Image 1 (cartoon, helix red, strand yellow):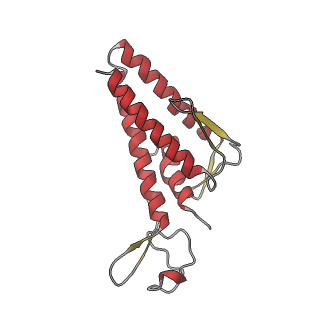
Image 2 (image 1 turned 90 degrees about the vertical axis):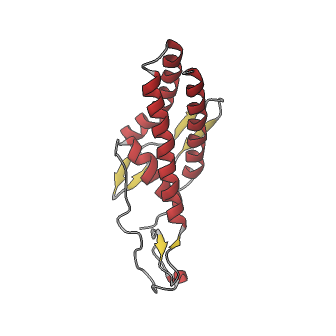
Image 3 (image 1 turned 90 degrees about the horizontal axis):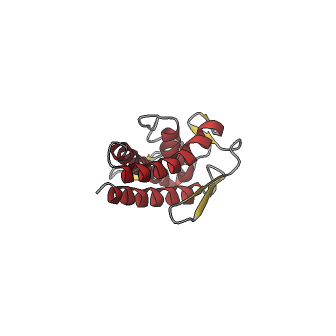
Length: 171
């Protein structure tokens, strides 16, 4: 099976959030497919790190995994603020509703149409998911392999803006 940092980021970050999982884990950090101390001989592209005489060597897969965790943290922070804002003043509740609608615009279509097989998201049935950020710019997700990194970067930046806006509304 061929993986990419993009698919790792989507699998371990957005996909687990969409389905309400509390977290994720990698089944194996190193999946031996070459000469154990020759990183250039590894053919399995899903390996998170490679052993070396000086300790583990991170691969681009690990970068995707790490970014996925950060994506989840940003989304979780926004979700917690939304809950807090919903028990506050009317202005904060109105602001929270806008941000919840943004999260729903991502979660609902993915939940309805994305399939996951062996931990890998398949977006074929989804077609194209297009979202609009706070500033009116748009981003689209069409494939787990192509463009998902840019999509997730857009989501993270927009979620960060929403966190700041909601904190301001709660003052």
